[in-house]
Length: 390
Image (cartoon, rainbow, N blue to C red; front, side, top):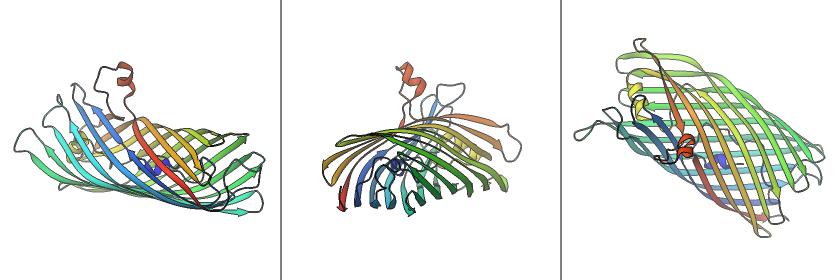
């Protein structure tokens, strides 16, 4: 879909070698404005208290694209030759609150940050039916928060810095058939998470090796696609905190994603809809920290985060002139996360936090309270043909 560049999720599946609606011929430009949310919610055991955190970036995306279409009837819409560059930048607001009923002393935080996302794609034809493909995607978030604990005044406060980054590089091969195509790729993913306060420091980074496959078909105006990808490897982890010695060790990280999509190309309107099941297991939490996690980190606990999310994407593109397309992008994400905490000193019992990825309705809606409100991305954009014919 490409909407991953205007999503607040850093470690979700990255758009690499596929495509959605058929691109404008020749050279084209795009501009997108988007709003996104990233939310985490934890209900404290044995009380009515809620611990909620969120990030709200506002993206501006610009892109350039040069394409040569495949021969008529060959493949399922992916260009024969393509060069594409997309850059998405966003300021963000961070907020965390432990609401009434949470055990004292309550912890809260507020701060600002920025997203810096980039995607590059190069597709080179090899013969009449094949293409060699190379892609790079970088998604990065950095934030500085002021964390405070306690009630009333005075309250203790400390500055916290957070950083999270994922970079994907993929090399693939695509084979086109009559009304269908099949692609495969090898990929290398680097991930990094960092959390620092005056008394606690967590840093994990390293590379994951992986692979992915994709199949696409086209029948008349209809198109469909399925894809799967997996990456795994050992990450280097360094942790420090007051009252505990420095500790360095390796921990396994994995990233999985499985997607299915369907599209309809009308005379003036194209619609593309996809569902992605995304799963990650990483030895850190570095985005939208909860107050509970901050307290446990300060007490020498080490986190292992395992998340499962379902991502629903909808893209609608409308021709408003022969060389201009307007585009609406919608994304809703439902999910949950387990944060398993183990004590580095061996003195405290292990704990598990069950975290909802998404917001709370505030009660009164039984069905919605069970599912929760989704994380969302909403984008509006324009695509302009610069050279070439329709």
